[in-house]
Image (cartoon, rainbow, N blue to C red; front, top):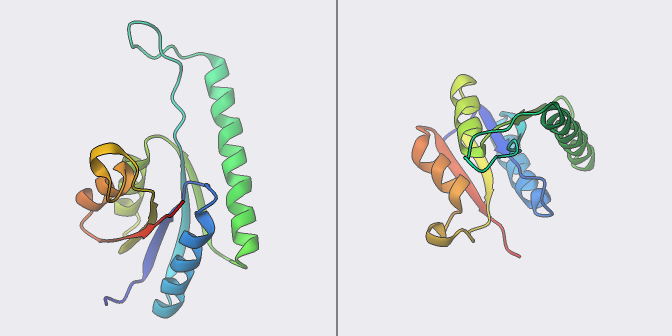
Amino acid sequence: MANYNNILVAVDLSDAVDSVVQKAVDVAQRNQAKMTLFHVVEYLPPMDVSYEPALTTNWAMDSDLLVKHATDRLQKICDKHHLKDIRQVVVVGTAKYEICTYAGENNCDLIILGAHGRHGIRLLLGSTANGVLHEMPCDVMAIKITE
């Protein structure tokens, strides 16, 4: 197994987040690696019938509220797992794109994420995990989420 220095842990804030975080903590401790807890708020602006974004000021306000909620939730996760001095990042966008962009810009050498595996053709990993796996040059660890 490779030695990792910079681990990105992408979480979706579902009930399964604890199992993903715990496995990530175990890997980070074994490798004495720094860890970033990362969440993407996948909030899309309302669409009109021509499929063009209909941006309103309400969308921006709703987005800010979702980011605040996600930020608060990440802090609770860190508190629950006794994680101190860990970077917490919340962004708005598309999960696959934001995870890959952040990992590339911050020289992450391992991405850990949960894989629900219930997305049609991509039954093994799920669309986000599958997309990240095929896009990134670094290692990707998918934690199987069971219902």
